[in-house]
Length: 324
Image (tube, rainbow, N blue to C red):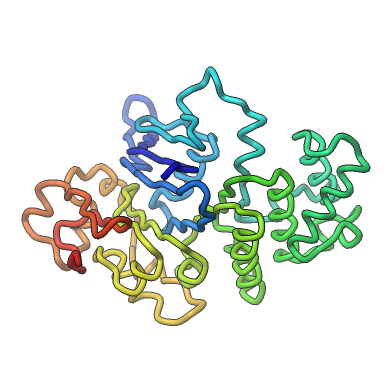
């Protein structure tokens, strides 16, 4: 099947500290993921702070260039700079960021951002067309131009601003939306409204989402597929219900056990008491120092990715589920 997004063995390395005494940190370490074309999908990328999920998000958005591997969008490789069309890319891929109060300046009316998107990306030829386009986008998220017109960020709640951010992303009718922690800064009472909106828009506009989150309850609710990252590595991937109901990797099991109730997030201070930079450079299993099932073999070489059926895989020497 054709792929909308195909991430192949992608790696991103950052240097921490100075040029002479600095250290390399492998923020994304050989990650491979894909989203099929033609079938709208919500792929959640989960993991605690520092696992590499936001870096992966920025790689997809072309905010970083990978140091290894390849990213292909709708058949076009990011490595093909000669044929790269920035306008086409911005039409096909749109971001939604964590804090809507940082997305919009307090000095400009919020609707000006939506009009600029419609006009600069040539969705509308003139202001009159832009008004129609912007109003339709706002209505798709339960708002309207009459409600938003000439108002500033201080006149909206966080949930309302995030809805406006989503409307702005929808103006281009994108194929893919990258949502980086989109409900992290929103009041809990509004969180599920935004998540439900993603599900509705997926089918209504035939748009796929990469949903970056550390909120496992919303990931379970909204996702078609889930990818778990740990220290830059993809350690488990597959259908959301299968992974969260029956995790194969000990780390995923740990995360599931730390979120016993709907609406809770895991307590990062309990799961990972510190973020040790040395763990990113481990050449054997990166989870071995914390894994209750680790053996001598786990501390000698990195495990290979094991497949379970056609769509589930786990990076572990001793997966907790057996192939059917």
